[in-house]
Length: 280
Image 1: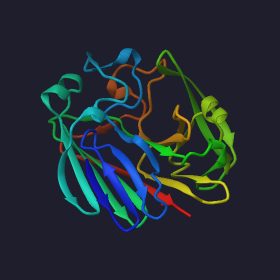
Image 2 (image 1 turned 45 degrees about the horizontal axis):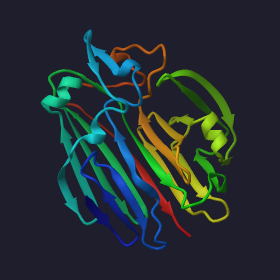
Image 3 (image 1 turned 135 degrees about the vertical axis):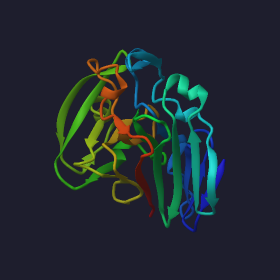
Image 4 (image 1 turned 30 degrees about the vertical axis):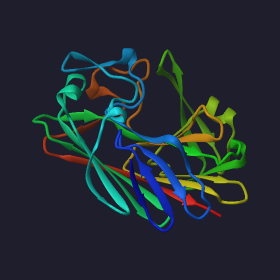
């Protein structure tokens, strides 16, 4: 476990999956994540049909949300307020994902904000293909979900895509209009997980009514920003995704997956999101 901290926050990150596990506010002594909560998703987001995909007509097996969550990272650099983790392809990863890569994840603190930066480097002699994302399970501090409001930026009426799961992959997509602020409840998220295109929305604020206590997540260079029912009381999952899960008709070819990223030999891809803790 690695700990970074400043005068506002104390943050803990596991070496396994470079997983963000705690954001403790020093002023109110509250942790704004639940245990084992902010996970990186790579190289595939969500489930694949039959847990498999193809590359150059060869089939490979891949579990839900890829393999990076169980990968041990090395510490590339660390100081009291920042840490950089690194992992690279291995013969074991190559057997299920036939690409050579390096993935860097940097966590840094600025006052009451955690910045999470991703960098993917292609160290192969061919183009590589991947999804990249993060899911953060945000604590509601023992409060019911209907005590919270969601606001977004830019502030406007919103169209959200609805994906429903059937037989472990996405089978249906609809749209629904929301006016902000959105008064949250479990029914909304059970019936309609909120998946916004980042071209329309790049910031989600989850704040308790009348107090402004909560968290604000802002994404940069992601395709989607999401709000999904977590399955546990007093928490909700906010995601930033480059890519989207399979639908029933999605091709098995990794090159044709939804919002797949392609990266040429020697090139890099970067994106980031921030988590600002609002405390009163």
